[in-house]
Image 1 (cartoon, rainbow, N blue to C red):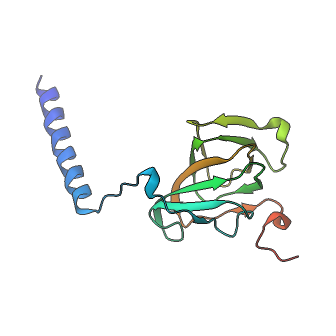
Image 2: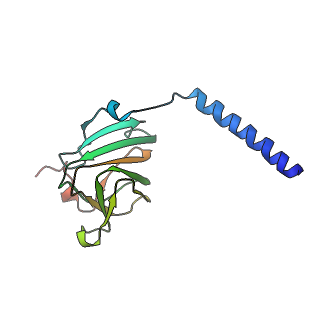
Image 3: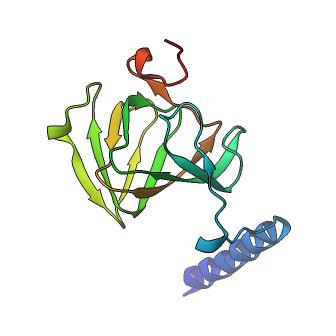
Length: 156
């Protein structure tokens, strides 16, 4: 019984510290109608829109970004320098693993799906319908194409 009491008191103390720490930071709430869409980062193929919901993808620290892509959109095989944590908000994401875009090996992930990839994991995505995904990770955000010629920032 003493151990349970000590554990409960410790847990209450920890929760109090956590509440105090978060009370010092500004909170963030974003309703769907308040999302401000703009052009996606130039490292992505043209046609996507992005909205930063929290944090700053160009700086160190946690951020949340929504990406809206049109039907037919695709991102060639690539990696990221940090964990990539993705929730499919609407539509369907077709996720394939590896250094080549073998669509027959991709898995369709409908709205409500979630995936997390460790740093440097080669993968590709494509979309058969307009889709919105939310990416949550630590910045600075980056994307490195397996084949540098796939990078839309490269001039021909």
